[in-house]
Length: 297
Image 1 (cartoon, rainbow, N blue to C red):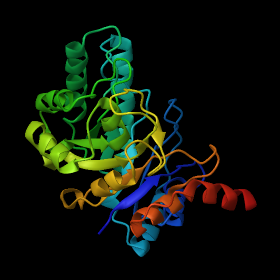
Image 2 (image 1 turned 90 degrees about the horizontal axis):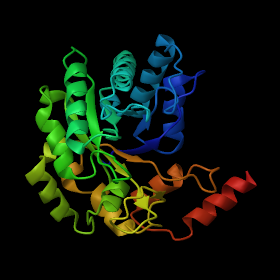
Image 3 (image 1 turned 180 degrees about the vertical axis):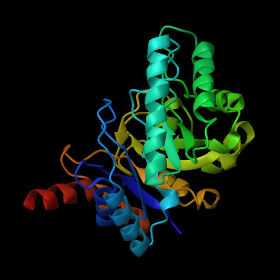
């Protein structure tokens, strides 16, 4: 069964229930969300009542809660060893993990961070130290290191960098990887032969570590290190290659999450993109159809 969804909102009033309702409106059977704004530390109390209502709705809709993913805030940067900034990142990520535990979420995607002002090795050592501290608790949350495009001093632009982090993590049961198709392309990996890429991943890290796939086309040529997402089939990766990734049998049980751009920055494309993916037939007029339909509404 195809496990596919998208990023959805998580608002103060309806919280997880609102996320589930939005996901269902797109025809999704999984989804990803932030437990609060990714750019700041403002967080509101989580409602047990809304959580229970959300779980009931998910059960009715046949959504496996174990496939739902939370994304950690962007402002967490474990790669920065500056004591005050490092301590902030550890404390904030610890709180995010607790929020996931309360909601029952078992997978959290994390950007490894940026080694600003220090060497890559020092940045990676800082990440490992933070993860070992955070993953020593009895939480059930697995941290998924996201593959990065390689902007600036990002850590995780190569599979070798991701492996180096994983090798240093003591609790291997709570560490995994989220592969992002746009990031991999922009980092320089050729996804047109996805079997070859998976073989490489298996040799370096191990396929069992892949616990989530961010499905995004790219506005950029391979190796650009720019990280600009494009709608499915409208970028340089292309529909056929993305389909080969989405439907690859080795990733059948792994949730696939769309993070593609809103049309005209106004209209979410996820319902139409998911339907196109399910139909396995690229529609070159999809964006214009969304624009016309949403404008008429």
